[in-house]
Structures are given as C-alpha cells and as structure tokens.
Length: 391
Image: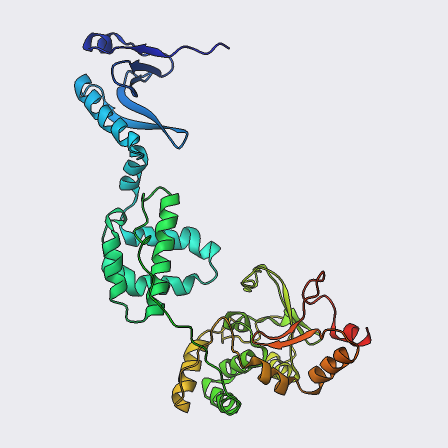
C-alpha cells in the first residue's frame, strides 16, 4: 500500500475552519513553524501537537485544544518547545515527570515495592536508612524539586561517615530508578561527595572467643545457637539465620544460589556453595532439630527464621565491656584460628593428608570459614569429603 504524503501547508484561521473530520485521525502540518501540527479526531476534536525527535525516537507533545489556543499562540509555544529540544532537553519527558513524580515519599514507596523487594536482598537495611534520615526531611517534597543542595544538607546531619555514605547510596538508587520510570529527569545525588572512611578490622583474639561463646548464652537458646554456628562457620548472618535442615546432609551445608519458596533468600553472588560443618556446629544443629528433617534450623515460635542477631551481638559486647564487634558481611578475620580449633582432628588430618600427597586441601580455613577449595575446572563443593580422602 503506497504511503500517503504528509499534509503540509501554511496554516491560517480559514484552513483551520475548513479541515473536516475523517474516519481516521488526520494530521495537518504547519510549514511556518517546524514541528507544529493540527490533529483532527474522527469526533471533530482538534488539538495542537508538537512532534520532535529525542534520542532518535519521536516524541509527541500535546499543546492543547485548538478551540482554546489560537494559531499564533500555538506557534509561539511550539517555538519554545523546539528551542528546548535544540538545547538537548526532552520537554515531553519533563512534563510526564512533573505529572507523575508525586512526593518523595510516594516515589520511595514505589521503588521499594516495585523494585527493591524484588531485586535487592538487603532492601530492609536501605529502607531503614530512607525512613530514618530521608523521609523526615523530604517526605512531603515533590521528588522533582529535590536538589543537590538538599542532599548535602541531609548528609551533613548524619554523624557517622559510613551511615552517611550508605544513606547517599540508598537515595541515589531511588532517583536512578525514578529516572528509568520517567518520574524525574535528574539524580540530585550525582556529584555529591562521599565521606572519607577508614577501613576497620575487628579481630576477636583467642582470649575473647570463649568469652563471647559464653556471653551468647544470655541471648536465648535459638539466637545463642545461631551466633555460635556463625562463629564456627564464618558465614553471613542472613545465611545462618535462614539455614534449613533439608540443606544439610553428611556434614555438608548446601546453600542454593537462587531463592526458594521455603524462605531461603539465596546467596549473595547467586551461586550455590557447600560449607563443611565442624562437629561442634553439627551438635548444635542436632540439639535444635529434634530429629526433624525440614524447616529452619533457627526458628521462632511461629516457625519463621529468627532475627535480632545484630542486637544480640551488641548486647554481648556491652556485657563483656569490649569494643563493639559487628556481624559484618565480610565475616571475621578470626575464622581461621577458630575453625582450626573447632574442626579438630577431622579437618587437620584432612589437610595433612592432602599436603603429603602434594595436593591442595579441599578445606580452606580463612576469613570466610571452612569452605571447599575451588579447583580450576570444578564447581565449589562437587566432591564429598570421603571422596577426597580416598583420592
């Protein structure tokens, strides 16, 4: 079917009156003002449109009804719009952002429910920072009017440099998502300087380990057991808190990379890992499981995964009167000596046997705990312990 040539002419008041509705929408382009067109609907409704290209894509900007806006006024508005386009702006996107942005609280809520809860495993921490530091200052402000100066003001009120950086990252994530949704056009967090921080390394000494071990008993049976297993394995607190019985077999704890419907949230890098559990950890798990074979190892009265491990660790530090040690995601650098002590004969014998054969031990005793070593072409945790002993 041949393509119909555009209907172009220098619009006048007389032409506007003569244009009649058709069975389909009709566009009449003005040759006097570039981009300006009159759209006539089958119902007889006439409206001014400005059509331009931005990012190699056509954009339609609705000026308004032709019976309310004169031809001269439409040309003036079209000229202003085309000037903004020449400057590299996108007037239609900016109009949509102004119309849909709403308050920062509304945008933050949409980001949380439409994106963060689905994509970010640590969304609760970021949400806390947003509610604690950003919403009190910006909740009722339109998201599009928040400026870089507003961001710096909020960041300046946060005493902790680390918390300030984390809050800045949480705010930037919200605005970056809002830009993709065309709710705002700019991210005011860009260009805001991050606070300088000093890397801190909190190492539990050999003398502190038994003190913490005993102090954990005041946290209650379930939380105390979770904290002790965390010390024994050196794994992430969130992973230990959601450890499931069906993932444990023959002394190995398999952590699926992907989330499951049973409440396991997956690993940080979305890869499946296997961790060897020392006898002390297996004894703790056996005591809690009561011969069950499924469900969370460390569960609440309602059979949900426990929480509050950070609070329990903080309370233990206060009772012992020592510098605060946190359940950091990078794990403790003391895991190596602790693992060597708690693994006992089974781990040490395995290492010695491997060394005598001139091979690499499948157990890696380091800050990440006791893990299977990764061979060049083998996935983590492929070979069981007994297979390696007989190799």
